[in-house]
Amino acid sequence: MEIQVTVNGKKFTSDVEPRTLLVHYVREVLNLTGTNVGCDTSSCGACSLHLDGEAVKSCTVLAVQADGANITTIEGMAAADGTLHPMQQSFMENHGLQCGFCTPGMVMAATSLLKENPNPTEDEVRIGLEGNLCRCTGYHNIVKAVLAAAGK
Amino acid sequence: MIPAAFDYVRAGSAAEAISLIGQHGSDAKFIAGGHSLLPMMKLRLAQPAVLVDISRISDLSYIKDAGDHIAIGAMTRHMEVEKSSVLAQHVPLLAHAAGHVGDPQVRHRGTIGGSIAHADPASDLPATTLALGATYVVQGPNGTREIAASDFYKSFLESDLAEDEMLTEIRVPKMNGAGWSFQKFNRRAQDWAIVGVAAWRGANGSGVGLVNMGQTPILASSVSAALAGGSSIADAAALAVADAQPSADNNATVEYRTHLAKVLVRRALEQASA
Ligand SMILES: Cc1cc2nc3c(=O)[nH]c(=O)nc-3n(C[C@H](O)[C@H](O)[C@H](O)COP(=O)(O)OP(=O)(O)OC[C@H]3O[C@@H](n4cnc5c(N)ncnc54)[C@H](O)[C@@H]3O)c2cc1C
Ligand code: FES
Ligand code: FES
Image (tube, rainbow over all chains, first blue to last red; front, top):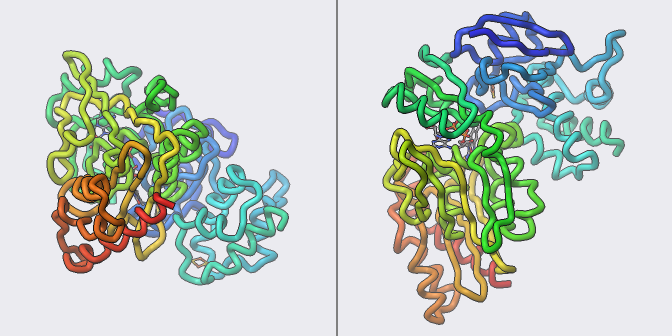
């Protein structure tokens, strides 16, 4: 089935099987491999990207369901000249990552969270990121990074 | 994990969706948010031959004040239920419960209609709308009918919906200032409740819904009857499992669930009565 999507500002038209998951479409057809597959069971959030501006788990969305949508992946967060998105910068400055596997999903979930709640408390950040698992950091510096990006 | 192959069609209206399901027969399924169906398809627990996508039927996404009740379109996503100012004012229990479904990513996709149609006893919104005395509006090839939430849930993942019927609207009576509480007990973030309780108590009675305490969401009628008869909260809460049939799973034994339900119902009633 033919789908048209805008990914990181660029338009793509592709012919996909209906059962293609959005995460596989993004990684294998568009070669945007920053979006990771962690659990593949809708639990870990590593595959989070923005679908029409909201974070979703792309392992649990069909590519055909995204037809016509505006998608942003981690590759689309930095400016064209390479300047990091403030959330990426904040993760770097606050040591919000170790192995980095969860980081793209964390950054996508965190930016979606701040869009909905620009001024979160620490608790709201922790609860807002409950769909994203990190096996390295213990979350402390991730929460610190998000609060710093929110100007706290 | 990739689902088995299927054909995909998109419906622009409820009538079109029902006619598409009718054409493709029992191998076809509606997909709304896909957040119950796709995980099952990836595990090949479900292998529909055709998916009829109803998520773009935008005139079924709304939250409206309809006088004595709030009417919610089946395609309204959990996040919209959670953030609705109309619900915050008139049915705060439902808005609050919706905010406890999964995590934000799940709530950006999952719909209230999908959650109710899926009829999972472990889900939060079936038991919550049951406690609130909701009515579900269902459309089929021969028109619409209304089903009381208390008549809707038949057995595990089975509801009164026929294969060619679609849930279109959820009508929830206004709470008129009644006290309420939502208790969700789980051990991991974003998880389903091991036991959950949705309760309200006001001038015209009370309602207590139990999550994950049987094959269907459970209305704890004995608790409300005891309260109406003048029982104390402690005595009423002791009847928490009178209408339930808890079973054991990896998270809890029957005894543990039974104990938990009584404790959570007591806490919920205390909070709702405060
Ligand atoms: C990681 C994760 C965590 C979750 N945690 C929770 C939780 O804590 N609590 C909770 O309650 N839920 C939880 N859920 C489930 C979530 O709430 C689902 O969104 C919801 O159960 C199903 O809604 P949906 O729109 O995604 O339905 P779908 O998955 O699209 O459909 C579910 C079923 O209902 C049918 N259907 C859908 N809409 C209609 C309709 N309008 N008429 C007739 N049939 C219809 C479909 O054919 C399918 O059989 C979780 C899901 C995930 C992935
Ligand atoms: S890979 Fe999608 S949630 Fe884990
Ligand atoms: S940094 Fe390794 S999983 Fe989060």
